[in-house]
Image (tube, rainbow, N blue to C red; front, side, top):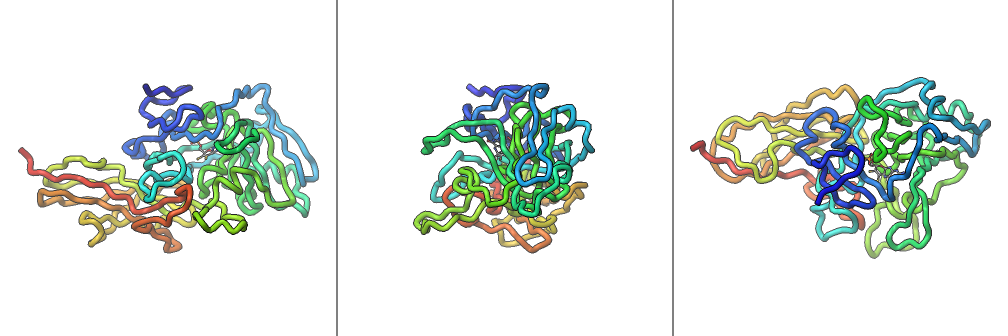
Length: 358
Ligand code: MTE
């Protein structure tokens, strides 16, 4: 039986109940933002019990003035709004061969929302960074033990200074116009646009400015690109920027269409640079034609695209969508393999059948 906590929709694909991990069905990615109760969820540990009235956020470490803020004080600070998507680093890993470690996300580990909160930079400016400041550590209130690890830990991730001071890096208390739901980090979470979702730390309780690189489990052992057999003891590369990707949201896999004109639809995004083009192939990648890209209004949201397909002959077709960004990063037919299948951005392919009308 499907069960989700809080006010999440039963339409979510639940991959794990405890901790809760649930994906947004692809047909529901078909808009500029995803309704809050359909936004994907990725938790490593149980959702911590948080009470906004008792909660406070500490800003500590290599700063001139450490301080802490209540929820009410935070809401009095200058408000910033941002439309941005989050994508789980493991999104789209289900199709990777040979099979990889981790939950088998299809393409449902991505969603976009309107966030509101305070720029992380505003808090760092108030604290005053010391010259030794190197990284900003975001610490969540959730705790637990990861598979294969003996010690209990919290969920924490650091940002390099340029990312922490980027005005679009947000501490969000609202999502789509309402206070964050418990599953999405109430009362306060980070939203780090352009990077995979793991640094968008939920249930924030402390921001610590460090004078050295952070070495926490999730950052230096879990969310890293690791090859098998290449473990020479050197630190593995950290997963950061979102790779360019496009998904076909309509038609769905295996859908039957009639001979005639069809408007294929989808979404595309890239962490490194704006999307320059999306191309569509309806013949398994031989011929590519440009789709029409819609302006999204936010650099950090996805862009919707549309392609008018004249399906003149009955048959079986493989539709593919390939995005390229303004730095000329494009999607590969098959993304490089790594141990946890992170950042998989292989070209999305959807088989369909075209029939004559009865
Ligand atoms: N923050 C905390 N404290 N604990 C977590 O388990 N999961 C991270 C990130 N922030 C996580 C967290 C991961 S891996 C992702 S992809 C995003 O939250 C997902 O955010 P969402 O559940 O709101 O979609």
